[in-house]
Picture 1: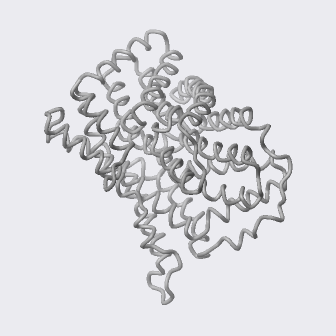
Picture 2: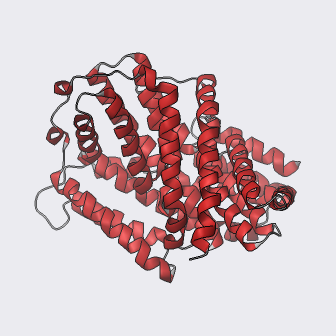
Picture 3: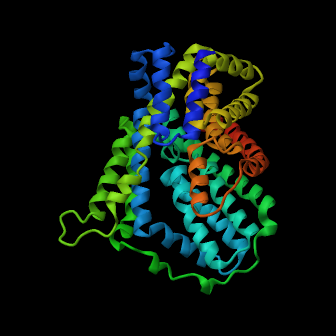
Length: 435
């Protein structure tokens, strides 16, 4: 009960973020309280840091890359091209922007998609003079696809990185399992979003109201480097995974290379991208948050919650692989929606690690825990940092979505997408395991 009380206190601090405290210092305050209360020991700091350091710095490097490309105009250029490809038809523009969100989420993480794509989409909608209902449809689609399409690669979500590192899943193995499953998640998301908002999407929109995509480019050198850099990083992830090279080293090297180009290192002319602003807005607080929050959750797991989770998973395993997959995924989703998906991921991993289940069922539960923690947070606004960031961006742009309105939509959209994705996993993983 003491460990649970400290966790609730920490979560309240993280969501509330009293003035002067970001999510990082709020989480560290909870960790300090857990240490003083004896819920965790000093030796546990090294254990938790070993779990989170690679995921944390990979995430920071990805966001730095995203921010540089955003300042250079790359994402605005891409979105304007997508809007033109819609050819003035709203029913074509909607799925195109959803697919753009899915691609950005895959390569720049769900937080990057929520942080970068949302203001660009809003700017386009304002230019096109969409109705408030149509605007809400596109905004909600952008926010939801950021999480529901964050499954395909290890780097697509902080949850994925923590899970892959904890269970020793290589980049190649993870992609072989989850990339096809992610396609089902995208299609299911698009179908449910269309059913929910399709009637509000205008049939036509004025293409001539859009500016020339070339006008959005601020730094042509950086923009030209975007696709080659992504290709090199992707190849490096696959090749170096065999040697267990940390993802953060690969991603960090990519971020440094892009910083060098943006800063015109070795060139006479100054850079155009405001690198000081980029580094100031990089998510450094996530480093403190990861260590602090995971320490609190590790103590909660050690206090018996992981054992309870393991017992629940063992009971589900007796019902067969399909029930075990769906049950584990929904259990993770509900937990994530209540306590945020980052602490929920570690708690789920500890439970799977302790559960005495057959090997195939264990593998299914490992990936079901990822799916539940990637998709499940959409039930509530506090479910993921990506959602909290997204709501903050919307508020800054003058669009306020209340928690009640959000949860009404989240409870409508999330369950069918989550179920379809877990069923796809239960069908696909045994076939990959047999190869």
